[in-house]
Amino acid sequence: MSRPPASFRHIHLELARESDHPAGDNAHGYDILAPLTADGFLDAEEWRAHRDKCRVRRFRPDDDDLIGRLKHSQGGKWYIDYDPDRDDDDERALHFENEQFRPGEYVAIRENDGTTHTFRVVAVRMLD
Image 1 (tube, rainbow, N blue to C red):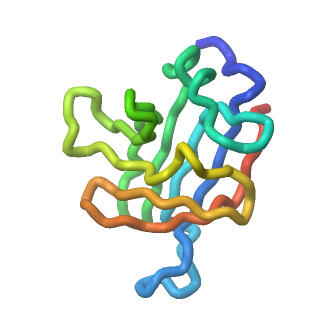
Image 2 (tube, rainbow, N blue to C red):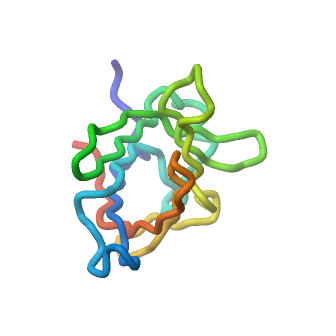
Image 3 (tube, rainbow, N blue to C red):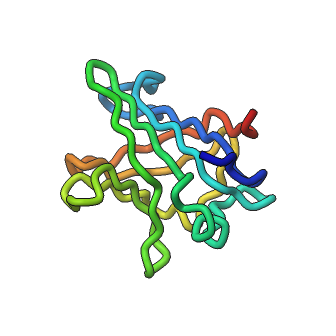
């Protein structure tokens, strides 16, 4: 597999504080491989050209990791697709089209069980 373009970043998200996790949870989150613009937004044009390289790993305590793809709908919305033959496992990346991926920022994902969680952007790294 060829190397992703220079605009691709490894984005690490961890569960932010919420009622069941008052300190957040660094064992519940996502690793996303996706292209970002110079100012930290998801780059839909670059995604279209290299969509096969846009990957997501969801990790949770006491659960196997899920590996999926970051997808972009015709309406401009982003989502995570774990199985292309099913829709019931997809997760909505809420407002990702307007979010800036910088450490310390927050994003929301509606997970496939219907629960929406807020995640803190912990790191955004260039690929090695």
